[in-house]
Structures are given as C-alpha cells and as structure tokens.
Length: 513
Image (cartoon, rainbow, N blue to C red; front, side):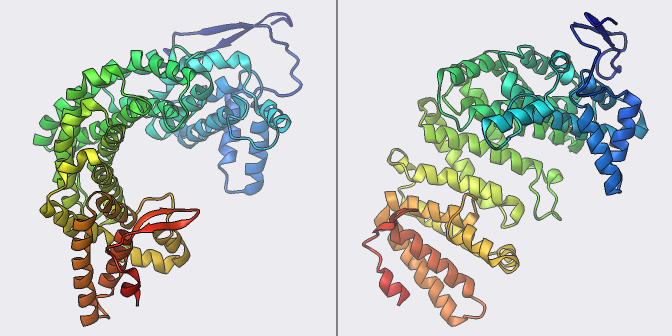
C-alpha cells in the first residue's frame, strides 16, 4: 500500500456474499490513523466476547475498546464478517456484533439520527465521535439485505433495524438498490427471509404516516408505490390462496409464518394508504377487501392457546391489523370503499361478539369498538344503526361487557392505583376497553340521542337495583352504571375547559344525589 492509493481487499464470508466474490475498493486513504485503529476479526471476537462478561470492569474495558475502533475504516465491514460467521461457538458473539453494528449506525450514520439532544454544535460533535467512515458505507448498503436474509431470526431483527436507520436518511435518493433488493427476495421459499424483508420494508414505510403532506413526501411515496405495490398485492393474494389448504391439513408450522407475513403486509398497506388512496389500490380494491374479509372470518382452533391469557395469537394480531386498515378507509370516506362498508360492519360486529374478556383480546376489542364508533358517529352511516333493536344489542353485547371491571383490572388497580386512575378514568393516550366503550356510547348519543338516552337509563336503573340488592357482590354493576351515566350526560368537552355541554335529557344532579 502507498500513502496515495490504498487497495482494500475484503474477503467476506460466504454467508454475506458468495465465497468466490471479492470486493475491491480503491480509496485515497492515509495509512496514518491517529483517531482510530481497525481491529482484526479475531480481536473483535475477543472484545465482543468480553463485552458479555458478568464482570463489570471487563465489560467496560471491552466497550471502551469498541468505541475507540468503531470509526476506523474497515471496522464496520469486520463487524459484518463476524455477524456472517457460521461457527456455532460464535452465536452470542454474532448477536453482540449485530447489536454493536446497529448502535454504530444509529449514532454515526447521519447527524441526529440517534436522537441526540442539545444544540447543533453538541450534536455535530457527538456525530463526529461516532461517524461511520464514508468509504465503508456503499459496501455496507450493497450487502446488508443479502446478509439479513442469511442469518438467524434474532440477528435478522438487528440487521433489519440497521437497514431502517440507514434508510431514514439515505432512502431512496442515496440508496436506489434497496427496494429492488428487498423485492427480489419476496419469492424466497424460506419464510423467515420473506418475513424479515416484510418487517424491514414496514419499518421503512412507517415514515409515510403521521407527517405533514409535502411534495417531497409524495415523491417518495410514488417512488415506493411504482415498485412495491404490485409485488405486495401478488404476495397478499398468493398467501391467501394457500391458507385454505394448510388449514385443512392442520399444518400449523406452515400457517404461522404466513399469518405473520399477512399481518406485516397489512401494516405496509396502512402506510402506503395513509396519506391518500393510491390509484393502484383503488383498481385492486376487490382483491384486498376479499382478503380482509377472509381474515376477519378466519378461525383455527389449532392456532389458539387456551392456556395463554395475555399474549395475542397470530390470528388476533392479523385481525387487529385488518380492522386498522378498515378504520383508515372509513375515516377517509373513500367512495370506492363504501360498497364494502356494510359487510365489514357486520364482520367486525360478529368478531366483537366472539372476543373474550381476556387481556390477549384487548387490542382486538378496542380496535373493533373504535371502528364501530367511527361509523356510528357519522350521519352518512346512520342507516346502518338506526333500528332500536340494533342500538339495544350494541348496549347489551358490546358497551356494557366492555365497561365491566375485570379481575385483571382489579389486579392492575391494586398494583398501581394512581396509574390505573390516570389511564382509565382521566384519559390517556392508551386505549382501554372501558375508554373505547364510552367513546362508542357518546357516538351513539350524537346520532341517536333520544333512543340512546332511553336505553341507557333503563340499563342504569337495572344495574343500580342489582347493586342495592347485593352491594357486596354487585359493586361492579354500580361502577358500570356510573360510567353509562357519564357517557350519555357529556355532549361536549375538552381537556382545557372540561365539559361545556350536557345532555338535557339526563338529570345528573338527581343521579348523584
């Protein structure tokens, strides 16, 4: 090597790229490294191994050594070679290397990409301290997707997050091969690869949500749509076609990764449709809606764990994602979606009637109730709910059961009364069954105030009578009666000014006297 021209030969492991492949990078690199010195792969393996030591001093020395070398040219490539290692003994070290790589990207890929605080000068100084060398960046980006598709799932997660962090600043303008690389692996027969690609794409496309519209944003969305919308739709249709065969054969091992893929596809659909309804999805509305309907009706006892009370199953999380898409479309009042609305209202309704009171179904219950609330509260959907029998069934089978205090709620109150009160009674960003049930009740009042007030008053009287007959055992009924009364009494309120308008058909003072 000369001081004018350095040639770096990087023989990457076969897991990263084919073993016969050699990357040759020509760079004007000075051989005098004053700020950082690159580690060999054996040295890096030893340091990462010591970073896992139970001894605090050993861990601190290892972390200092990693920090001192991470800005050296070639260090990131050495880390990826270690991540790609196939040696069984390297398992924990590979995981540590993947985490180390993600942290380097988080802090050193772009200024403020790691969420630095303070003024611009401090942020720039922090970035320079961790900056990933420019000469390593293209090599990393060219092979990250391929490496992610060859490593175990727990390492795949770290590399997927690394890709998302880089994409936040470089995609699409400075990383135009990322999307083609991801798309090319959607037809892989290994479902861990397909799911890894989908999860990574989902994390990248989340940037399209909850942001102000702009020409730059729409340019990026169109870039993604033109390349990704058709492969995504074809994959969605293909998996849906496979569900019946694997369900009939009770092949749980094949069903689980496909349901996971469908759930992630639904989240990608949400991101791509968040700003506006794209023309392609409007043209293929029938295929997507047919799939969503199939998912809401899907039942498979072999995928349900009756002993599990807290963690939702693969069908539950898929159905939550589907209803979130329906909620998005319903709130946009998109005309192409209106013909499907009545059917989906029935499907979500039936799903809510099947949902248990267990915590594992909380997300499904709250998402379904929010969807119904968004429809009930709009004049244009009035005819779907205007029958008194429908309103009474909503009360008896959705509102009251989800307002009732459960054993898990009692335990939460006993563990942390203050947190329970703040989240459940005073409102918070979190969605609870009780909070969503009250929102549904208020939506009913906005459209059907006389009928809702009458039905609610009847239930309040019945529940208070039950409480007075057996106060020790029926105190939950009194709690529900109070929430019902508050739900129909308040017509308008704000966080700043409180209640500004009440239901004139309700005598609040008499109730609390």
